[in-house]
Length: 90
Picture: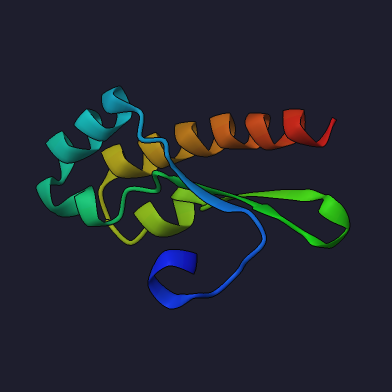
């Protein structure tokens, strides 16, 4: 944003984190699901120099696709992301 808009911001990073195996399974079940894949994680600096790590809830987003394979997959991904979030809090 500094280069294009001349705006200074606190550090803010968007990480692309798609798991190829999960993405493949989702695309096999629903070819248009690529637009909904919850692959981004945001890491940003807060006031006091603390850091926030933000995940999208895959069950909330992928739940828009009414297919059992996608529901199961989103539940598996949610468990893994929850484990990561709990590890970061420790």
